[in-house]
Image (cartoon, rainbow, N blue to C red):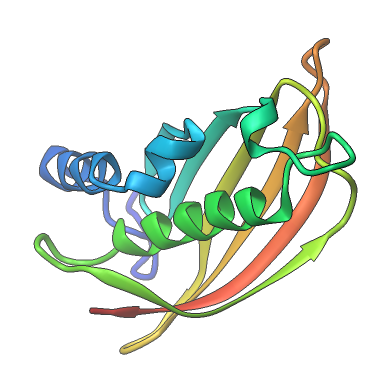
Length: 148
């Protein structure tokens, strides 16, 4: 079956390596213990273990850690659609905190909503994974990325 003209191209091994190398250079992601779980064209999933070091005073994941994870997932989703050697920066990002983030792991799935000629509109969905493996939506981010 032919791919529609507007469908993303397959992710090349070189692009995946570029994204992983870029992620490995992010001190913030290392600090909070984040990792890459999946990379696809226009879609990247990151996760981090929930621990006291990223918590706030009520025992939930701090909104700053949630924002950082979602912003990175959305940014790498945007980068996955750019040419090799490109870089991306966040122009703006909004977060809706839907529920307290508690559990054993926080998962952020970033997606490109619209890839324009200059700007990319992105979103990231954050879920908290409970000890039994069930998922609860905890935040939604919407942002704009630009090639750097």
